[in-house]
Amino acid sequence: MEGYLNFSLCYDEVLGGRFFDFLEKKFKEVQKKYHIKNIEEILDLGCGTGLFLKNFYGKNIKIFGIDQAFTMLYEGKKIKNFNGICFKFPPIPVKGKFSLIVSFYDTLNHLLNSQQLKETFFEVKRLLKKEGFFLFDTNNLNAFKKIMGSPEPFIYESTGGFIQIHTQYFKDLMISKAEISGKWMGINIREEIYERYWSQKEIKNYLKEAGFNFIKKEEWVLGKIYGRKPIKDFWIAKI
Image (cartoon, rainbow, N blue to C red; front, side):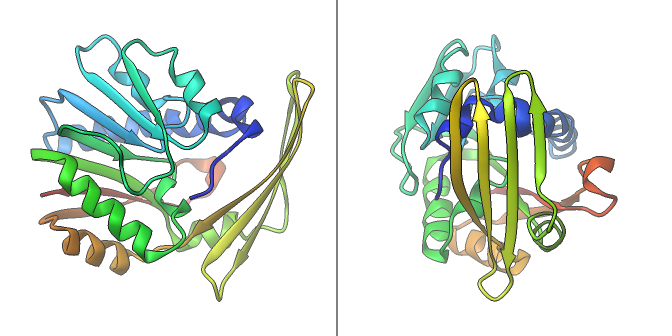
């Protein structure tokens, strides 16, 4: 799984904040629909700067996050009682059990081979409490074709600096590459990020193989800025 380095400096402003505005609404909808309550501990895989975890601040919930980018976790440390672990999972190096484990903003698409994805699901199952939930999203094929395969770069410019992201989707490999370049707060940024398309069938089979019995998938339309068609699948799983 690839991680962000200097791009972490502007990640929230350029991409993260916009997505988590949509996620907050979706999470509340799913939480009500599937009766996800009594959350005592939460683990966020690929937590980034902890944007999603901020929703649980001050609610007497133990908050844990894992991300391989130290610069991302540094921002997360601003959340009270946030326990951040810098690690490239799988495996997942934590002890104890969790009532909720999440992984958002296509974190699992950054796992580029089936063994990594399978192992992650087995690790999540090991760490979940009885009646605990595993929530995550993945980019669907439309996202890879229309967004990650777009010939036009994404460009963002503000007082902080300038960022452009060129993407390319390799259909035969089912892998996309994003080339991130620019300058932010006087720091040069040049990174490459890869993602893998996972089909709904693959994800369902790997979840079942890991021991999940309750598996639901919802198509997710983020908003007009991303088009009218759903570009993500939102997964709800339970042992």
